[in-house]
Length: 368
Image 1: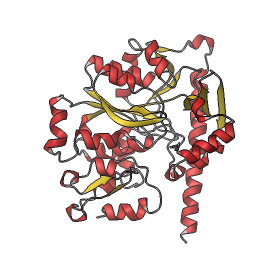
Image 2: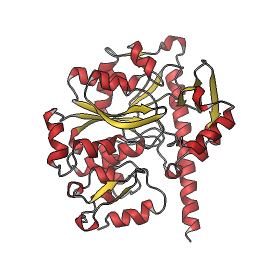
Image 3: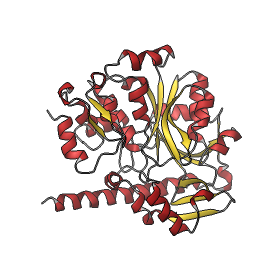
Image 4: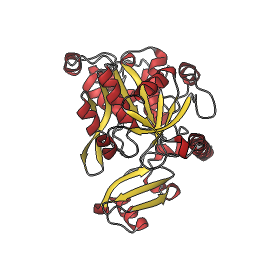
């Protein structure tokens, strides 16, 4: 049986760790002090001798494929981009949500709907803590969900917060009791493809607390882009702007930089490899293929979100939400918009899959 030591050798040392936090979040012995995420978001031993070598962390890692066929069966995955039940273009009805959101605010609208309907007790999201800086948070009120709206590029992930604030396989009193007092038994998670895959791996194994995650809402992902000082300087040079003039940023077909004066700068993603986390170059999932619902701005008009429902649960949630907190795009003005959006998503997925395959081949060739 392979253990965390093998994960270090095969994933971390190869630079393929996605920092999703799944190995620490669901570690059987985390409450005994076996593993932790360090200040860089990298999993590591706290006390090596407390690891019980169960192999759980290895099995659920998104970079490890030993549970891939079972996970695909669980979600009904089909090629080339996972199961697609329906494709929609929509936005939140609430203008307050739309104003805060990067695209159409559909994710926020759905979370608000689920909370108000009593289908969830909270949602694992991220919240703003500074200019272009976010951290994970567990939102339990409508206001907290709305305040979390917006786009982020950093490595703060929902499951990192889930580990520290909620519970893992064997919860400690300090971490678990406050969440029990809040009555949290049903949680939605919003995450990148690697996060969603780690949760699905746990569901495949039937290990608690994965049963607490009732809805997986996945984000389209071109990669995790880091905005450190060095990257900021290069962005300023490429786009001929000052960082302090930026209002918000978004990714569709390009990196879209919205300036405070209302103007918009577009930078092709091919020019941004210097900002992309190393492991993202080897990820082949663009559209969160294992989610209940996947979301992104690509293929949608400004102010709208492209939505793919993938599971019966996801389709039911969206159908109920669009009569309450969401509104659909006026398809009469563009009858082919959903078909065109889906085709564009397939193109982006194919490109990401091809790049990942080539990059992995280069690693193999380099190690020969």
